[in-house]
Length: 387
Ligand SMILES: *Cc1c(COP(=O)(O)O)cnc(C)c1O
Image 1 (cartoon, rainbow, N blue to C red):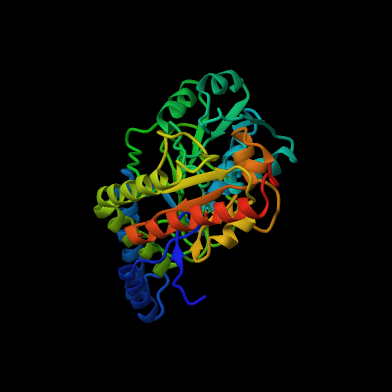
Image 2: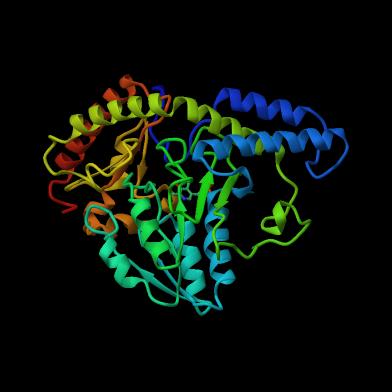
């Protein structure tokens, strides 16, 4: 197919901003520099790290010394959940999370279940949102940690992290938020949010893969045991030689996001509205997740009587995700959509469109046209088959 690809998978990863690439390359070409060394190149590297830490701290309005650099949100989630559970295990071994979390949270929680911790899995309401009353009922005297994400990576549903955090603070329970999808797309103000631990990653925000961060609040009882041991960097919480070009790149991506967030959101919201307007009148098409408590950049749509993998192939040249990109090797229907009460068939027909800063209205028009055409063709080929 000679047609140009239309990338609508920004929730899986984003292209690296060209100013960010330039900065990264210039630092990589700049010669040897270990941010722990006290000679001049070392001090320059340390200064670049300090600048980047300040940029990310400003984006989320926290003190720079509350941020720990990691390899990405997977590591941040693991460090937060496993690290906090181990730090607080003498007080209790009970955690609360949801089946709709990213695998980095659910699998870290399951691993703890195998190590003598107890996990309560809260089923969301059909719109994907957490029921606060259910959370309140689930909190026990031995509960140490609640992990509920900001923007869901499959559906775009936005949890009320302020209300969840207040409930946790009132019960002396730590609150961890996976904010990989929301960072730099929706405002996050850690000076007012009652959140103890928050995970970030650069590559969902036009930065490179392989660099993330964990925010650890300056709160009593809020600390994590390290998962790695080594040269003592980052107050021993996450040792290892700092990847200065990646850190600087994340910092610049955060600064760009701070400047463009409002315009990005307006652009993405307008395109998403057009996309959904173009699809919603097709018979048997369903939006997955809340229609209003959502980040516009992720639109997850199921259709009666079609199968997701065939649909995705029929949608070429659109690059979209079916079920969860992280699960694309498996034929299992998305656990997230199943937890929202979708049937196996509807979950399997789901297509996730995700829109980014570079998306154009021409691409959205093509997506509408292709989706309508593909659903029509597949239904004509196998009427009622997938029902
Ligand atoms: C992408 C993503 C992750 C994993 O981040 P990596 O940096 O790729 O490890 C974790 N949680 C959510 C919600 C994500 O979207």
